[in-house]
Every structure is written in structure tokens, then in C-alpha cells.
Image (cartoon, rainbow, N blue to C red; front, side, top):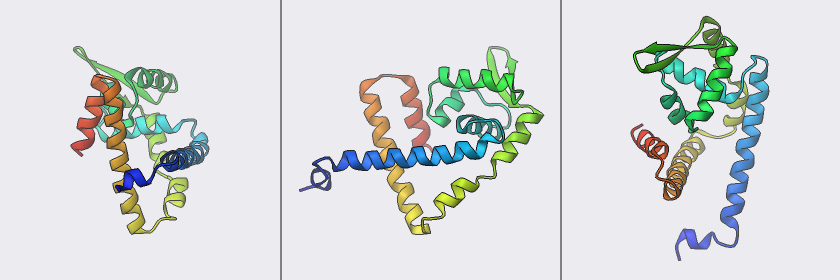
Length: 165
């Protein structure tokens, strides 16, 4: 009998439920940490990606990076523009995003990830490596399941970008 079949009787659902609760707890801790800077974890991800792409990020690149649809990213970008954190730059038909001085200051403050460090340091190096490998397998399986329900280019890009890391 395979490991998958042995996990029946609700064990997969219980494991998924634990994973979801853990994710929400970590996100809630990070939200509280970021609150003093007036941004959300999603906005912190957006600042990170714009910085990584040297202030030439497109909304599509950000959507792929944070695994969100472009309309969700667009809503966040509009809010962040109003907050003075980023600006849109038009180069022909292409629009890229760059950090303002205020956005770069906030980005640098978000690099202090004490809650994440405190939580993740409860794992040994070996446990961290095992968790990473397991999560990568789960992410790929989840994206493949999503692709079964949709012929969305969004999912294809996510899978392509994830496998090219």
C-alpha cells in the first residue's frame, strides 16, 4: 500500500488544516509587526519584488511572485501609490513600478523580520531543509491541481517561474 493510500481517513485534510492554521498564525504575527509601518504583508512582498527587480517591475512579474492575480496586485498598487510608496513609469506601452524614497525607507524597515525569525528558528537546519522540500512539492502539486480547473496563463506562468528557480 502506498503512503498516499495509508494517509486516508481524513489524515490529509487534518494535515492541510494544520498547514492552513499555521500559515494564518504566521501571517497574523507578521501583520502585527508590519502594522507600525502602515503596510500589509502583501504590500511588503510587492516592495520586495520591486526592489529585487531594480525598480523596473511589472504588475505581471509581481503577480507571479506573490501568487496573486493581476487585479489583486493592481488594487494594492493603487493603494501604495496613494500612500506614496511607489510610482508607475510609462515606457511606451510598458508600465513598470519603482519605489519612491518613502517606499524604499519602508522596504528597508520591513527587512527586520523578527517575528519570522523567531518562528522559523524553532526548526533545526535539517528540519528547515525538509520543510522547504516538502513545501515545494506541495506547491507544485497544488499549482498542478489548479491548472486542471483552469487553462489560465497565470497558472502556467507560476509553474514555469517556480520550476525555473
